[in-house]
Image (cartoon, rainbow, N blue to C red; front, side, top):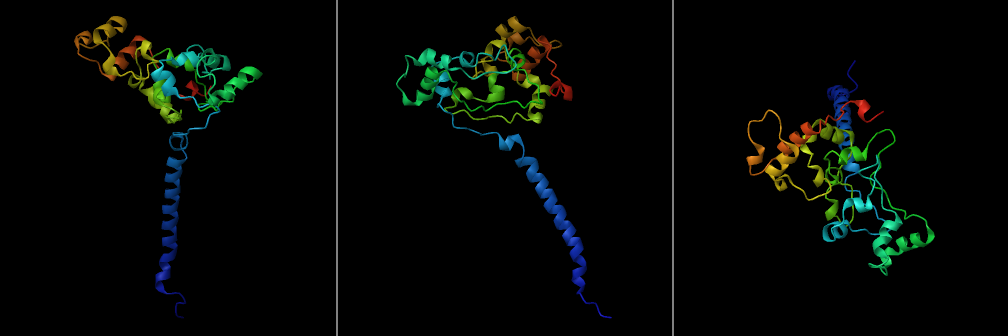
Length: 241
């Protein structure tokens, strides 16, 4: 009996299997990239009830982060400023600016301004804000150059892989504790002799750091890591308690 189907149809099952594998790999790769915080979170820039330009307040006026975010050094979770903090200045400065109407209404009613939170750690992750800023991790490392943002946006993914990168190599991010809130700080700003006088230098090194023209981030970070005995947890229990 003659074959009903032509011979080339024998390849159809194999071709279908190959197509399914290619499609599955493509979907997996797309999900791996596009369904991660690096893609879904970074750049998120919500409209706030009051347009607060950090670049004007911090860079131009020189306000310290801690004036508005007063819990950063003492609490596990930071805070947004309450209305009284805003009105300390704005009872006199730009008091007739219509953009400040939500703040003025909040001041009269006692109801807080409904700020849109950008950074909220999920309930199953333990994170202590004060533990980080009190040991040389700057606002810049997690929030980016906020001092140059006219509208704040999410600058870092805050994913588990992103956190672990810092926990495994904290020396890449540590800075002197008096520079934690200086978002424009760079390793080149450090005066070697002054740094060594305050923090010493990395043990086991033969070169005198105080005589160098400038220190690298690695030299600064490794010295501070050793000085402060920083050993961030990298196991599950460190953050999922």
